[in-house]
Image: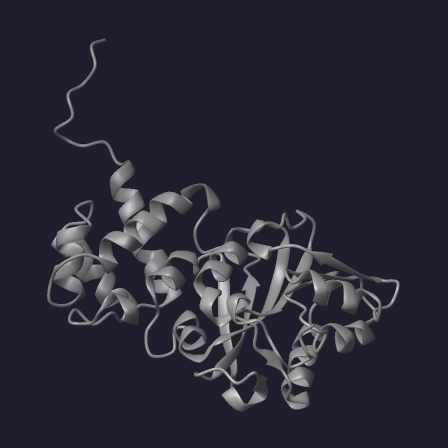
Length: 270
């Protein structure tokens, strides 16, 4: 049977052992409202302190032995479920997601979180570099830009590798994700928006002016230049340097142009 600090390698388990980090985690969750769903409970380093918030708590744990052992130590308002979060159906009703995510599954876990319905806030511990990039520190990733209109990513603090047992090879990053009450782009336009972001991130050119000209044919060079002046975008910048608001404005302009009837379009017969 695994000891409290002996995570299974195949599950990528690195458990929090620093009480200060655990308290920081709990304090962030305390600022939210609603039932809590914890991703990967392990032996309860977060689960047991989270119970002190007095809210309904569901813990998802893939390791059956750990799940059974933790279930014997929790309060009646806490439910421990043996399941893989990547296949777990989260409720459509409001709730808060919490988790020290397995580092080797960070991207897959984050994608699952972003596609999951219902949750209003997420407090997550991931690899440090992933946390920085998701929050747009030092440049956002394409994944962050594709989801920015609907979610606000924030970096809270760096968590040293020494705070985990067993100790991973990299530091962690504590971050929050909040579902925007007023999205920057309508949900019905999600696919079109995300397609534009992908085209720009993978487009060719030296700087955003050239990249947009090549990858967003809906916009003329003059329109791109006007957008850049209005939103303070450097023509020689790169996609990773754009903010959520700048992306949303570029998409709104492209959407407007794309929906306009072409002056060259043949008129139908009367």
